[in-house]
Amino acid sequence: MSEQAEIAVPKTLTPQEQAVWDAKAKVRVLLNLWDLGGGKMQVKKGDLTKRIVRTGETSKNYELVIGELQEIGAIEYSLVNRVTLVELSAKGKEVLAQGVKSPDSLFEFDGSQIGTRLGNALLKWLRHADSSAGVGVEKAKGDAGAIASYEEFKAAILKVYDKLNRENNLDNLVPIYRMRREIGERVNRSKFNEWLLEMQANDIFQLMAGDTQDISPDKREDSIAIPGGALRYYAKCLNS
Image (cartoon, rainbow, N blue to C red; front, side):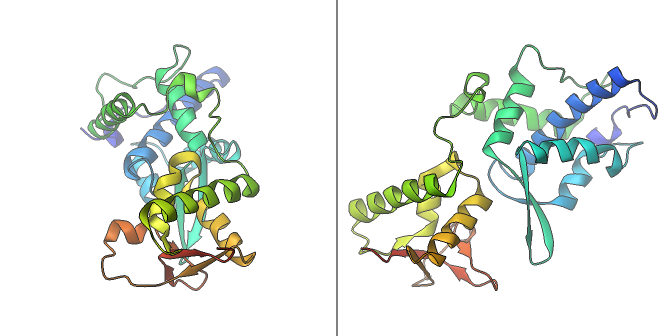
């Protein structure tokens, strides 16, 4: 049974019922986005819409919910090659954790049966959270390691660059995918891209193509595209 076949929301809701529906919908949106993107990748906005809209609903039912999630920084949009992509941020993972684990959460499954996709997504998220010390409710109160500004990112990524360069004898040519993975979930993908490009504009890093013979699809995904679409795989610190 798919989630789309679950019992649909009534067309007319009281304000209290609407508030409950919105709270549940936010968790479903975040959970489906986490599942589609594997917890770290951007997905097409259209793919997310297809996943969350159930029988008897339209995308308009979710406009307010998604707008609120975007407003609090739980999800972020970007435009790549004229395709709108959506990404679950570190804040979004915190909100998802609260929605699933908090005793005060209003989230529950509607109807008498659970949609297979949503149920499996929840199981996958719970296993991931338990096995990798993922974002829990306690952590959701505030992640001291999260990077919130360009200046914080600049300081952190320079430390990452120096560490990787020194420990691996990279001769001042550090793979961007390794920098991205080293800094992890302290910053989301779109901000990593934006701020790394800003560091190049400020003559701190030079982003280079370099030798790409051993670049696998996942490494390419974790590299960076410069304006115009060309990929850059390595960073060179201009102050080294």
